[in-house]
Length: 264
Image 1: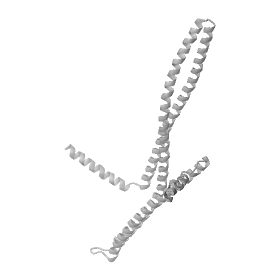
Image 2 (image 1 turned 90 degrees about the vertical axis):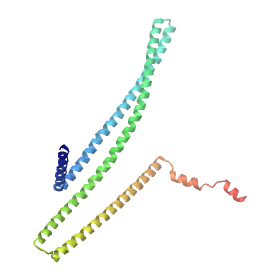
Image 3 (image 1 turned 120 degrees about the vertical axis):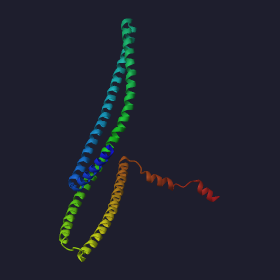
Image 4 (image 1 turned 120 degrees about the horizontal axis):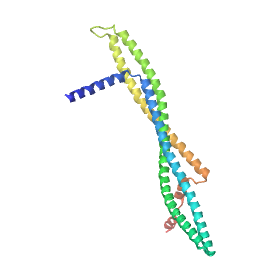
């Protein structure tokens, strides 16, 4: 009995969901999708900011530890020198006190050195995580921009679809009074034209998708070419040689053993 009720409930839920999808305004759904994409990008930026903040905090802790290590090192050297002076002056009490202080400072040096090594390892990990977070935000920003561009195109398509639906409804209203038992010639012609228009529309959609794919491929090639040009410009500004020119120069060098073998 429980299984039957559960199955019935799933059926009713699916049916109501289907009706809701049919009656839902596509523009509202489109805005909801764009709003969700923007919210997702905001959450990603917040997470990336936390990762970068962790990296910055680790870097500050490392700098403080290094500064503390330098200070303790100076104090330890000073304590040793003062202990030597006290020993030379015959003041054994001061010499012993300065020696104890130097030993404590030496222990502090060991602790700081271990802490610095640990912080260096942690900084390396957090830096990698920060770089990955920055890359994820940049990639998601590009994806969001593409969705916003797609939104404008979809809004235009929605308006066109509504206009076509209104025209179809008007034409169907005009033809409702025509034909009773046998379809009229106009009804048959309308059916044929509708099928032909649908087929042509499907063909145009396929062609549009192919054209859009080619445009994306062209844009990707253009971006790659622009990136290569920018890399060549950076190499030129840094005074670095072009690796492709070095490969051509190496390939053009003639092996000295080759002519000798030819003369033999």
